[in-house]
Image: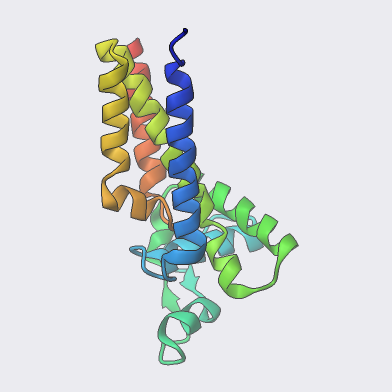
Length: 183
């Protein structure tokens, strides 16, 4: 009898993580429960609508976002300090937002659809953690354990189900360390 491939176990584990974060992103995690989600979403929507990068000091968090946050008790325009962030993450979320507008006009669902980018970035982070540890240790059990350990950190899962650039930053950092170690 042949042993199952480690790739199958890793793939299934990452698939389960993806399913978990999608369920959290779309149905469980309340809106605005992710740190600075209003600013990240405003950046996404502004980039999708204007096809231009937001400018610090000029970019605002629009009323239709703030209306859902504070239920009518808000200043009509709040400066969006998130507009200082690099645009790579927001290019992906703005594409998700545009795709979402083709499917629905339901505001709550549209606000949640860009969360899927963080879910994918979380999965890629886990994959590269596994590959990095396999490169460094040559042991499947240690590599799988490291990947599993990170996936069980509650904040990693929580942020992988929201509109924020933290998980994509972690993903790029993990990829960079992997290729540096490989070099």
